[in-house]
Length: 247
Image (cartoon, rainbow, N blue to C red; front, side):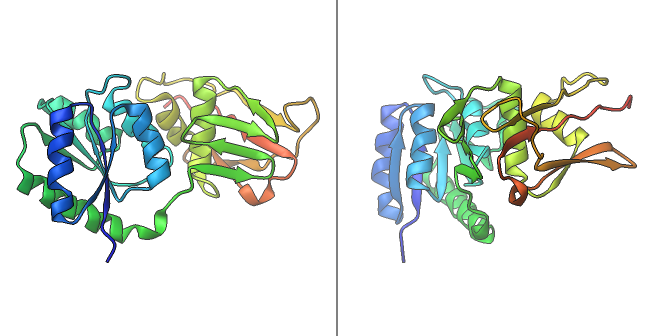
């Protein structure tokens, strides 16, 4: 039986040394990263079974690392942090973490939480995702946050990128405008907002594309987005535009 791989994203040497000594003796392989950026790359390279993540990293906050990982992987994330306030736990879980353990911690409890995480992973084993989305000439690298059309890199604004990756993550599914507003703009979205449409095709030329996305009228939600990857040919991608209702 293969040993489960645990990615530890932690900048404190004593914690890493402790986990490096303890986890292998309980049947786990360990991969280490000391920054958030290294951790995201390591997750893509090693495809760990579980991720142990500290929130207080030197380059990125652990919440941001969690959100980046959740853009392309559902690998269980156990937060291991000295932040013990309820608000911190809620924020981490809302960002996509599966569990939260405060420092100092007992090894027995961590091992139990690892076993729970592995059971959850086993139930969703068929949901593994490729961190690079490809269709037609479009390539979206969800780890490095790069978008390419053919050989040309496309530079997007943060919200354009969020909108594109939201569509990519739900490829072939219908998304309502409320879902897009929540996932891209968050809870601070005004009640009245127009999401403008931006269409890039044929390496962002002025030619008229045949959009691979359809805006569908829904009685309850006004508009929805259907992103059909199988229909993408020369059209690179479409950021479809919907208008939110007054409610």
